[in-house]
Length: 247
Picture 1 (cartoon, rainbow, N blue to C red):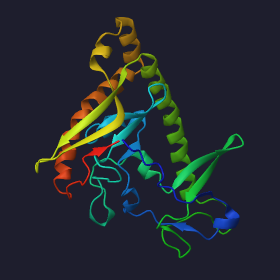
Picture 2 (spheres, rainbow, N blue to C red; picture 1 turned 180 degrees about the horizontal axis):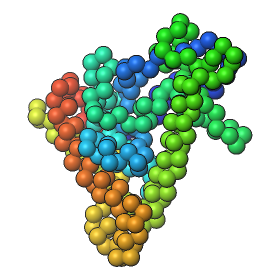
Picture 3 (cartoon, rainbow, N blue to C red; picture 1 turned 90 degrees about the horizontal axis):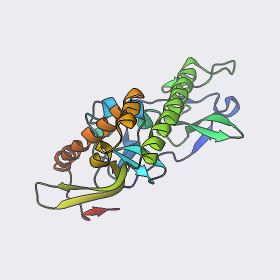
């Protein structure tokens, strides 16, 4: 699995001196995800995301990170439709926060914007970043709130991931997707929770996981793996892959 995190081409801290006349037009064009075949996912997103996406774990056995699978081949997002539309009911928060992101420097978080985002402009299109007096607009305040919430959920997700790592529940996994035309595509480089290891946990450990809602996240993850079948249907509308394996 190749998780593409480089959708940010030129993320710079927002400054009233530099961006006082800037606007951001978000619109509904997600073309910036065209070469992304998976995106990070927060635990709080599992209930909605599990209906459409296969939720897996990237990273390492000691430092796993949840991700939503968007495509079986490298650099291909099967949820991206014509004219940049998103072909899914739920859009992951990682995608929705673009072109904004926090950077961490000198013990504090800085709000950044990707200046290469197509909707970033000085022509008055979309939402203004600063008022005439140099103060941040309500739009920027709402972005800050969204990213602060994202950061809070990120830390909660880290705790969940460390818990399942400590319990030794994860194992490497490869997904096989057979196309109607015949070829089989293999997607590897990620991990999933082993059902047998989960069943073997002591009753008191399972009770603790249930009390913290972590057991629910585990079952949502396991349930979501059947969504790899949906990727086969999406592939049916794409050009057959030249290479059958992604590492």
